Amino acid sequence: MDDPRFNDIFNEDFDGNYDNVMNRIVDQINYPSCEGSGASVDGAGDDSNGNDSDNSNDDDDDDDVDDDSDVDEAFIIRRHFDRKKLIICTAGAINTYYINYMYKEPCMVSYNTGMRWLSEVLRGHWKRSVNMFRMDATTLLSLCTELETHHGLKPSRRMSVIEKVAMFLFTIAVGASNRQVQERFQHSGETISRCFKEVLKSLRLFAVEVIKPVDPQFTSTPREIAMNPRFMPHFKNCVGAIDGTHVRACIPSANQIPFIGRKGVPTQNVMAACSFDMQFMFVWAGWEGSAHDTCIFLEAIDSSNIKFPKPPEDKYYLVDAGYPNEYGYLGPYKGERYHFQEFRRRGQPSGRKEVFNRAHSSLRNVIERSFGVWKQRWKILQNMPAYPYKTQVEIVVTSMALHNYIRRSSQDDAVFSEYDHNPNLIPDDFLPDIVQASAVQGSQRPSRMDFVRDGIANSLMEQ
Image 1 (spheres, rainbow, N blue to C red):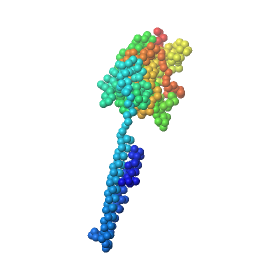
Image 2: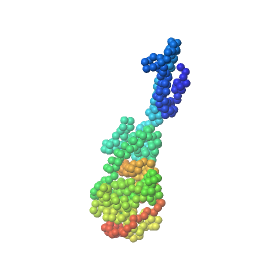
Image 3: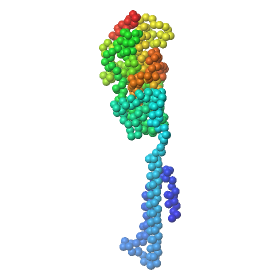
Image 4: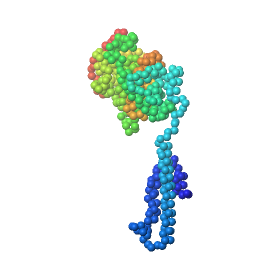
């Protein structure tokens, strides 16, 4: 049978427009009602009893029978190709749906899979692991064991814990995008994103255990003070240093104003306290870049909901001149030279206030050095991707936890060793101020720390 409509169905391109195929199916469903009028012709001349309404002769009856047979045959033929047309349309629609929504052509098919590459790196020269993951192979394996054993990170059917952790570390260490991680580890973007969230969740729990004082009661004098005659016994009651820093934030344009402060770009303001071996004891991230360091500091030490490790009686943290001289927080003399660069340019300190300020600055710079090591290690902090803001804050906190873990687990870490051998090495900030930081206005109340500061200054002068 050579029917144009029938041929059109067979010649239809079902790999093209899915909507066009479905419309043809709908047209086909409605088609029989249009063709059915021909089927009713064979009864048009009958009365209710099935008798002829006219008195035609027998020859006319024979012609009617032949006409009825032709109509029935045509109707059967149409029904036959209509059924085939519907089958073909349905098959084409199913094929189109499968190609567009179900069939996925393999993309990541490299022989050098992520796990094969990872095994090669971990078994190779130690610098390869440090370059890619910012820690040596031994530290990386122990971290994986820690996260799997105590913090809920589990392997999946096709991926081990070590590969998940390696993908996360590779992302934050070199600031890699999702596409770059896909190509390196030969996994889909959805898999990369899911594993990143799993590791981040585990590291949040890990951070609670790692970012805290090694000696919560601050019972002993830090070794870095006790072993240095410049600071002992003058600063024997000092437990750490406090300061704030800024990290780039990726914020939608409509919401950027609160996040733009003295850095001139959207940032989050991070308050941290560290020990004198460059480990973070406390971190409070997520504040807008326009928030003042003093406001964050006062909220941290005054709020009962913030578990800030407050110093015990007669102990104190070192803070810079931007913080109030509250009891337990010792600042320098204001209006005098303070920073190391000032003494290097203009000669030795004169008077007890400058002597105190130089010693205070030399000891307090441990927090600036800690920030320097931390930012130098994790490149993602220099250019944060467009994650949700909550995720950006969690990356800051978990990267600080990893900073502490490397300090405790890797005695030969190259970055820490560089700073240990150069006690006056203070790196330049990646985000320099473009607007001078403003001090919080208000009268400076007399404080018990003024007497502590005067006592230390007098002790330094007698040395």
